[in-house]
Amino acid sequence: MTSIGITIAFYALSGLSIGAAVAVFLTRNLLHAVIFVILAFIGMAGLFVTLSADFLAVSQVMIYAGAISVLLVFAVMLTPYASRDNGNSLFAPVGVLVGLGFAALIGFVATQVAWPVFSGSDLEAQNFTGTVRTIGGALLGGYALPFELASVLLLAALVGAIALVREDER
Amino acid sequence: MNPLEITLGHYLVVSGIVFGLGIAIALSKRNAIAVLMGIELMLNAVNLTFVAFSRFGSAFGPEPTQPLVGHVFVVFVLTVAAAEAAVALAMAVLVYRRRETVDLDRINLMRW
Image (cartoon, rainbow over all chains, first blue to last red; front, side, top):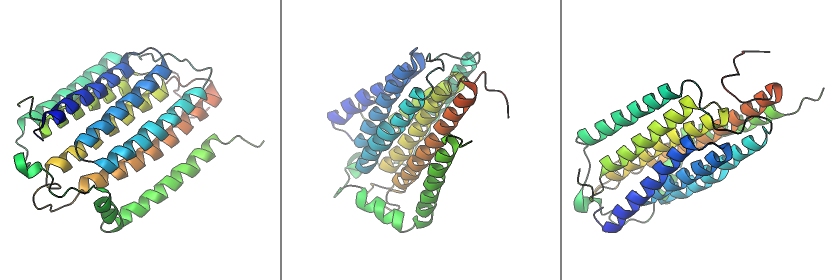
């Protein structure tokens, strides 16, 4: 992780993600907030690429920037007479303070703790052939039970969402 | 931290900032859909932490002991996030149908 390209990519992508998240907070239009949150998701996918997580970067683009953002746009469009401004409630100062506190705490811990990590040439990912094969093996091997439970969860969410928004017959 | 050599700490700091922004959005927005966006940002920050630890920890090392467990966890987080978004947005639409609002300051009844 010493090449200059990684450094530039890291700073550009993290700036994109953080800037888009700040814009989600600041913008006054809800649809603009949805667009900015998609931008933040895409920046995150780029950060995944810099971490050699190719499968997860593609999944991030497909699930977050694709599916979830479409759901968000649907929800905004399906509530037409609700207020479209992205206003803050009375607790906004408290929320900002709590968010700042969490960010400061995590940042402090992240910079102070000596994490047991590899560095230098150990990180040069020997024989890197993509992560898909390993993830697939783990999902159908040691993590088979959570994998099956996740499918049940998705089915429950699917049925639940349909049952919730179905129009009443009466 | 040397700013030009990207290490685990850099990614954790970015993740912490995005997580804090997600908390700030989730706690201070009035619109239920905006609150959901904050929650999604928080989940995304957690995913970044998982992937960063997986990259700099044991997964990619000379002798990977636990190959890509962090990535597997991120797959599950993605699954749960998608399910949660679907159900939460369905609830927002349902509340809107009954009350013509998704303003969380005005949704204060258990039943009506």
